[in-house]
Length: 320
Image (cartoon, rainbow, N blue to C red; front, side, top):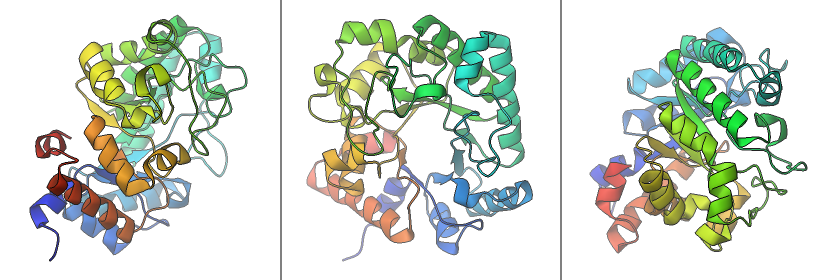
C-alpha cells in the first residue's frame, strides 16, 4: 500500500531539503513541484553568480513560491564567497564597531546580493550572546557578550535583510552562546535558569521579533530547566510555550539541521527527529546538507506514519 498523496504533500511542505552540485537534479525540482517547501544552498551548490541564478530559476520552475535558503552571515560563515572569504564584516566586527546603522547597511547589502540571485531566506543573523569565551561554534558569529548590544545589532541586521526582500531567520533559540560544546558533534548543555536566560540570552530574540523577523531557528542545545534531557528543537516548552506564547512570535519556526549530532543523538535519526520537532512546534524542518531523494521520502513517510499512529496531530502539521 502506497503513501497517501495528500498526506505526502502535507509532509513535504514542512521540509527544507538540499541537493549536491551546482545544477539541481531532476528529483530536487520534481519534489518542489510535489510540495517540498524548498532547499538550502551550501558551498557545493555555489560556483559563480550566474550559475546560482540559473539554479534558483530551475527550482522556481518547479513551484513559484519555493523557499531557497542559505547561511550567509558575513565574516566566517559564507556560502556565496566560500572559496575566497566573505567581503562583509562578520558580527563580532560589527558589534565591536558599535554602529547599528552600519550593521543595517551591511545586512541590506547581503540581502540585495541574495535577492538578485533568487535566494529568498537567509539563515541569519546569529543573535546568540557569546557569554562563553571558549564557545567552539558561535564565537565571532556573535555581535558580542552584552545582551543589550547584541539585541540592537540583531534588530538592525534583521531590518536590513528584510528591507532587501529576503526573509531573516534569527538563530539559535533560546541561545547557543553559553555552550562549550558544538551541537554539530554532540548535544551541548546550557545549565541556566529561566531567569538567567531571560536576562542574558533572550533579549536579542525579543528584539528581532519586535523588528518583524520572518523566522527563528531552533538550537540543538539542552537547557535542563526547560527541555529536560532533550534539545530545545524537540521541546514544546521552548518552541510553543516560550517562543510562541511568552514572546509572541508568529513567524516560521525553523529547525537547525536535523542531521546534526545534537539532534540525531536525541531522536535516533533524521526522520524521527522531524516528527519530534513538528510535535514540539517547529514549522520548517531543515534536513541538512547531505540529502538525496530517498532521505526526503523517508522523512515524509515517517511524518505520514506519525499522523496515522497519533504521534502527530494533523492540525499541527497543517499549521506548520
